[in-house]
Amino acid sequence: MKNITIIGTGYVGLVTGVGLSEFGNKVICADIDNDKILKLKAGEIPIYEPGLDEIIKRNVQNNRLLFTSDISSSIKNSEVIIIAVGTPQSDSGEADMQYVYSVVNEIKENLNGYKVICTKSTVPIGTGKKITNILKNNFKENSDFNYVSNPEFLREGSAVKDFLWPDRIIIGTSSLIAYEVMCDVYRPLYINKSPINHTSVETAEMIKYASNSFLALKISYINEIANLCELVGADVHDVASEMGKDGRISGKFLHPGPGFGGSCFPKDLESLSFISDEHGVQMDTLTAAITANRKQKKQMCNKLEKLVTTGIKDKVIAVLGLSFKANTDDIRESSSIDMINFILSMGGNVRAYDPIANKSMSRLFSNISYFKNVYEAIKKADALVVMTEWNEFIDIDLNKVYELMDKKFIFDMRNILDKNDERLGKFNYFGLGN
Ligand code: UDX
Ligand code: UDX
Image (cartoon, rainbow, N blue to C red):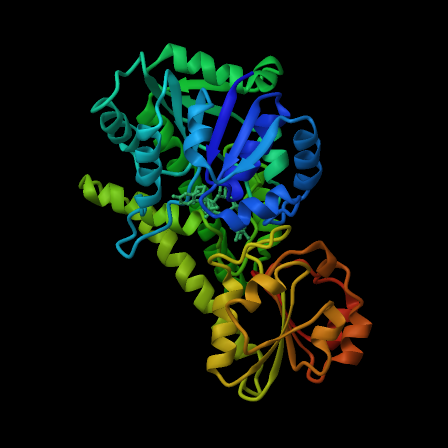
C-alpha cells in the first residue's frame, strides 16, 4: 500500500483516486479548481458516475481518501504522484500539454525524496522521455525519481466497474523498482491475477492511442455499413451480430449510431493523426475514421430533414438524449450538439430531455426548452429523435407517444426501439441500417 497523490480530479483522476483508495492505498486527490475540491470535501460529486458516491463515502470515512487544492504539500507527502490533468485538443489536432507540463514543474519544485512519477492522462508518444529529461535537469533518475506511463482505459458511465475490473493494466517504465511500486499500488488486482503488463514507456503511450483509435475506427466502419444496408435492403443489426460471432471481430463496439463523441475518441484520433504525420507515417485509417464520423453527424441531420417531409422550419422536434452516450452527464463532442444546432439553423424548435445531462446542455444552449421526462418533451412535437441509448427510452409507451405528438415522425439513431413493434407501424419511423 502506498501514499499516492492524484493531480487532476476530473473523470479519470477522480475515479482513479477513489479506485486506488479502495485498494487500500492512502490517496490525496488534488486539483487547482478549489470549488471542485470544496464540493468534494462536502461530499458533493462533480460528475455523474454510477457507484462512485458510495465508494467515495467509504474511503473518506476510513481516512484513505482526501481532497485538497494544496498540490505542493500533497506531493511532498506522497511516494507516488499520478498526473491526470486534461490534455485537450489544440487547433492543429495536437494534444495541448500545457497542464501536464505545469504539473511537472510543480512536482520538480516539491521533489523531496524518491518518488514514482506516473502519467494517466492520454499524452503523445515521447512525453515520458520529455518529462524524465525535465526532471533530470535537477534530480537523479533512479535515486530521486522514476517515471511510469500507466494509461487508463475506463469508459464514462461504467468507469468504476472498468477501474476495479480492468481488462489489463499497463505499466510502462524502464525501472524495475518503479514497476514493483506500481504492482504494490494495484496489489488487489495483482493478487486476483488481473493482467499487469510491463512495457517500455513509449509502448504504453502507444497502446492507449492505438486502442482508442481502433475502437473509434470500428464504430465509423459499422456506421458506414449501416448507411449502405439502408440502400441495399440489408439489416445492420443482423450484419453486426453475425460479424461479431467471429472471434477475430467480436461483437463489441459494432452498434451504429449518430457518430461517436466524448472527451477521448475525437481528440485521441486527431492527436495520433498529428503524431503520425509528424513522423511522416500517413495513417489513412485514422483520417478515414475522423472523416466518416464527421460525415455521420451531418448525415443524421440530413436524414432528419429528409424524414420530416413537411420541412423543419417552425416544427417542434423532441430530442431524447443529450449526453454523448448513456449513463454519463458528459456532453463533450456529443452528436446531440450537432443535431440541435442543425434544427435551430433550419428554424425549428427543440424540446429536449435527458435523464441527467439537461443541466450540462443548458450551459451550451439556453435557447431551447428542457423537460423532466420523455412525455413532457414530446408533447405537441412533430418529430422525435433518439440520440442517446438511455435504457428508459427502450420501453417508452408508443401509444401514449402517438397521442401526445402532433406529426408522427420518429428517428431512432440508436436503434433502441424494437423495429418489429407493431405500434411503430402508425408512425413515420426511421431507424439506422434497415
Ligand atoms: C483527462 C484527460 O483529459 C484525457 O486526456 C485523458 O484521456 C483522461 O484524463 P478527464 O478526466 O475527462 O480527461 O479531464 P477533465 O475532466 O478535464 O479533468 C481534468 C482535471 O484536472 C480538472 O478537474 C482540472 O481542474 C484539473 N487540473 C487541470 C489541475 O488540477 N491542474 C492543472 O494544471 C490543470
Ligand atoms: C472511451 C474508451 O472506450 C475508453 O477505453 C477510454 O479510456 C476513454 O474513451 P468513453 O469515451 O467513455 O471511453 O466512451 P465509449 O463507451 O468508448 O463511447 C465512445 C463513443 O462511441 C460514444 O459516443 C458512444 O455512443 C459511441 N459508440 C460506442 C457507438 O456509437 N457505437 C458503439 O458500438 C460503441
